Image (cartoon, rainbow, N blue to C red):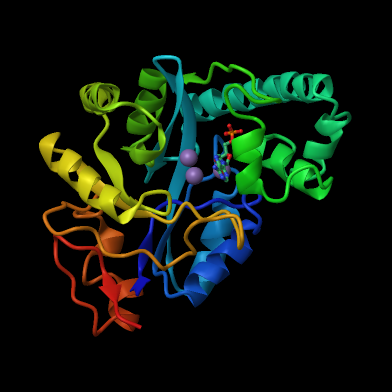
Length: 306
Ligand code: AMP
Ligand code: MN
Ligand code: MN
Ligand code: MN
């Protein structure tokens, strides 16, 4: 299975392992033709990614994944086809990044109490962009120190609620983030809704609030959903009249559930978030030149069989 569209990915500008150029080249090699770079809380990788995409003959969608707080919980909202130069968006993201720096100091203090010293410097050593420090960088430090065997285990034993290194944090306001995305010309997409560990009722109110606040799409197919969740969220999309998105959430080899370009198609009945995008029209250069054999329909993800 190879998917030609991937609308969620990370580079070294946030917590991915590949630089924007390396990521784009890997996507192209994996058969991706339309890639969104959606780094956490930063748009600084988009220029480099666009240049690499143009060289590789694929389309780059300007994206970002914004960390927000909804009802005291951390939620991620992906913005697609945003304008990275839009001032209120840039200022909002800068404030979130400053908050990350301040949170990192508190995380390190908690780890210190648990007998793990020097984790602040340790985590920053893994952050190619010091403007974005995330739990992933702390996780890499804990693994490198031999304290935990892999990053997945870190997120069970450390850095999560009730475990050493966990701190409460207040991210961007939910409505503000959706507002920045929309006002910059972008589409707000609720990222990996199956990952929030909410009960049915809370999940329903999150999706309802999202829609009411101006959100237009939810991720149905993502590297962090199970096959059952593809169906579950396809049903939510149709219930709430939301467009459906698809993206691997690729961070790097060995750190992601799903590689680039390996997603299954959207379940039938979904209306793709790209249904009216020029880069996804059958006439677009990136698609028509290489994808003569791929069927394009409004209601399914573009995919070919390997
Ligand atoms: P932060 O935004 O700093 O709270 O860090 C969140 C990041 O940690 C996510 O974007 C993922 O990259 C990573 N992460 C969260 N949970 C897990 C997990 N269970 N396994 C691997 N990585 C995770
Ligand atoms: Mn991440
Ligand atoms: Mn996320
Ligand atoms: Mn992500």
